[in-house]
Length: 210
Ligand SMILES: [Fe+2]
Image (cartoon, rainbow, N blue to C red; front, side):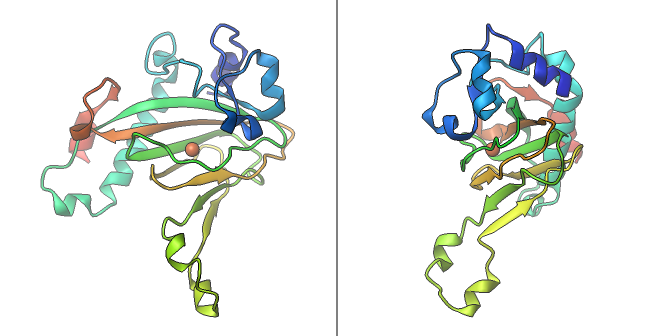
């Protein structure tokens, strides 16, 4: 996937967005050279990885992402609450490339239930992803030792070949990437079918089987 991501980054006809400090300004790059300042993501490029010419090339990753989301659902109490496990689909997927010092500011993934990130390349030592405890406001004013039992932020190292799956409402960000080689990720969103009528990459069979 790393070669594919680098190809997308070079595409001057479908400019993506610049990460790091440029990310919160919105919009897309004016030229591919802009990525040098903050990194590249296809998130705002208009590229749909579920449609050709990308679909086939990314299919192994799409399928692995679905599998990871199915596993996540299967390990939650959801199925104890509902005898009819929900169908789901991937609605968005994108790639991002971080050079030295690049990062992504804090954000959530809107319009989805479950999100994921897959690490295609990383130095595994820097650029940790950090999730903020969604209950942080309930203990923020507890200035006692007891407050130490709560964890404000959960950090995970970017391990090559690993998926991290998380609820889309979990606010998260990354540390700066400090490696000499690019850190390359594939990320996306998963939505339960009953709440979503649009198109996506659907494989409901596997979910029913899980
Ligand atoms: Fe994210």
